[in-house]
Length: 606
Image (cartoon, rainbow, N blue to C red):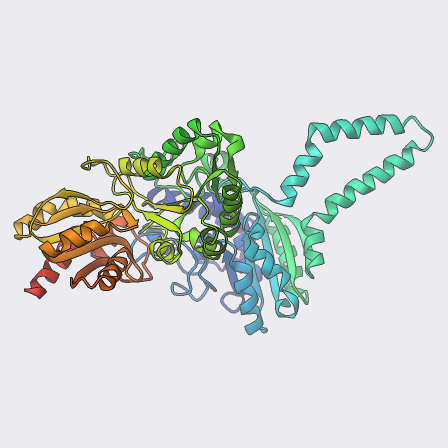
């Protein structure tokens, strides 16, 4: 194989074409982040031609745009295993390759990490590739403000494709472009010019207006902002012109002090369907190469939530939906169409989203903040300070709770139960069926003195007719058995129902309980029913520390109820990537592995 540093322009063009072809064919089979990687093919080639990895450290913020980097650093042969168990990971990860300088699943961490690396490694360059949405994250801004002496060998490359997961929001550049192109502004500008050009000094005034307009534009441009922070600025650079990219990267490499390169790219470049719908192909499930169509799935929990919130909003004008750069991903696409004035995309700024929701709530509105579980982690301080202490009725809809599968260790939602159980003045639910999700939303819509958290998985909604109606603080007994009690919350209810017949074959005729109410607990059921069973299991798709099971044990201790609880939850805090079905089985939360855990615990107590 020819070293890319020795390739001529034609060979490089062919290399770029082959990389795009491999990206498209692989992701069509495995799913993954296609559009971001198609957009950085030439940029990544140029970086690796100019710099020497792993001596020079390349940091991606976020790592979903690192597929090309993986292909250029010895992982091309294994690339067809992308996102598969024991295969190539979905993000940059130092445990996978020495060429991956830092793990990168969440946006906003890249510049901070690069700054630390640069401080520790003054003998090499540190290159951080960050998107135009990520750079607006507060974490990124804090890092930019802290460059100083520690950042002398840093090169920040702004990959500007004008997209995050969804469209970008809230940036100064968006505001400026809207202002400068607005009908009102253009009309006013035209009228003023028409008047002053009739006078003797019209030309001078016109020139002054132009200078003022350009000054505003320049002040808010990446050039002014970056130089204000101490960077040497280069750009804007055509992100698909290899020669131009290399020229500017070489200049930055030879510069003393931090550099900022503004690169313009096209997300999805080279695949027509990804170019036309880069939001869909940002992170896409397996698809048909010829048509770009993905398989039709059954209704998900996200979809059910999206329909229910539209139904609630139709009857209540105070309901406002908030999300962070993923309106469609969390099921709010239809809400956005129906109620464009009652939805807010805060961008990649979850902490701000929490406090913004608190501001709405304290003013009499009914905010529904919808985020992936893994991203909710970044708003923990605000949950305590801004919502809990003021007992504000914010609804936190936590999508992608539990095992997310192919997106891997940075995206698993296994800590949210522990987080929300820790914070006072929250009630916490994990619906066990799709219908129960709508019931919980209905029951909690008018709660005033407490915040509400509802978590649900990245799964097809489970269809099962539960007995009776949902009540806050009440569990539902689905089947009566003897000796063994299985209390399952969220997705684990389906797992228990799926193994019920096999358990009976092993002589385990268990009582099965659907427990959507995590906080408050069903204290009446605990006091009256637990004493009837020899073996009590609590099943949840979350981390075992500070879990639903832990809260039950704490209640038993406080009330001096002597009962042993077997917690069946996630014991490994770092879960690899792979198909969700495979991971659930490996973790002992599905099928025969789950039966083994239950049976083994019962046998051990006999």
